[in-house]
Image (cartoon, rainbow, N blue to C red; front, side):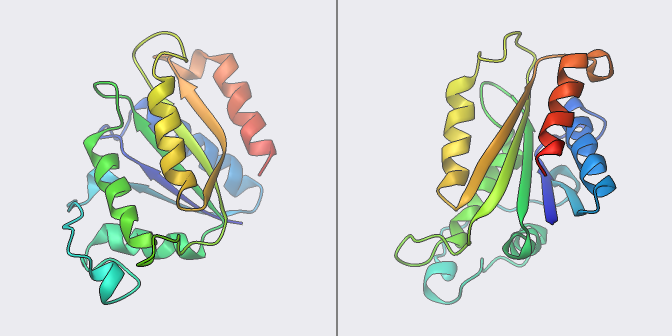
Length: 178
C-alpha cells in the first residue's frame, strides 16, 4: 500500500507529528511505502480561484510543493492527515492544503480521485476528546467529498503521548487495520 501523510502542525517536534510518525513507522514495518510531508516546511500558497484546474487542465495551476503532493495523492492508496486544534479549527497550514483540494474535482464538481482510504489525526489542548467533535466531523466530511473515505480518527488530548497507554493502543489498533 502507498501511504501519503500530511501534517498541518507548525511544530516539528509536536504531538501531531509524533503521532503521524508513529503511524508511518508501523505502516512501514508492515511493508507499506510511506511518505510524510510537514506543510510548515514549505512556502504555502492558497487557492487563487483561477479555475485553471476546472477549465485548462486536470491539476492545480500553481506550481509549488502542494501541487506536487496533490499529484502524489492520485497514486496513493491511503492519506493520513493531521493537525493540532488552533482556535477551534485546523491550523492555517492545513486549511491552505484543504482549499487546494478544490483542484481534485472536475468542472462538474465530481471528484477526480478513485476511492482512497483515510486517517485523521488531531491533537488538542482541551481535555475531552469530544470537545471539538463538530470540527472533526466537518473535516471528515470535506475529505469524504473527495472520495477519501476516513476509516479512523485519532483525537489526542494528552500532552505526553509516550505515557498515554490508551493512545498507544489506539495507534496499534489503527495500524492493525492497514
